[in-house]
Length: 199
Image (cartoon, rainbow, N blue to C red; front, side):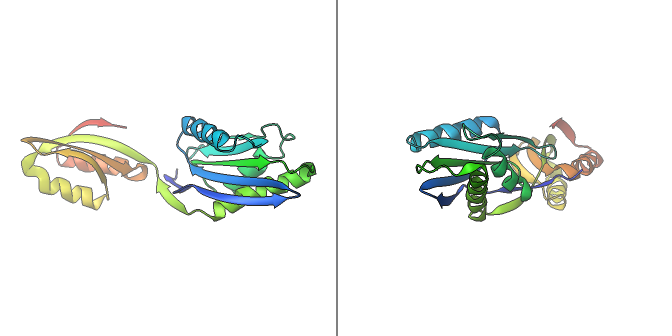
């Protein structure tokens, strides 16, 4: 199972215009549905005169949880095209909201599909996607005189240090790639270190 996934690093925008209607797309990095709700509330306040706030998101890896919402547009004409843009780039932990200002002329279902798809694609074109990794947290303790051995292990496994305490009985909390987790734990055992928690 891969611990590697693609996501975006910062918010971005895209714009598509058709027959007077404006479709403004916003892409955000997100980690849970609370963030999704916060961004939706924010955009509804920012664009309180808009007609629709259609969106899609994908969260999690390797099993992504996703949702698409047409917000009053014809079924599958808005949320699904947005979601397909996220999935076509194999992204996760991403929300795209497309805010529509109605221009007075109906576009038909195929016109809407194209508009929402194009706006979402534009927002993704204007951001940067990066590879990230699923990580596990490990908290362990060691004697101060083992510091050099511990730091060598940290370096060998490219571990991210979250916090550390240097006392007679030292503690360190770290993040490690999921694929390296078991080997790292074995390395700690070989040094006879005490693992307090791991997740």
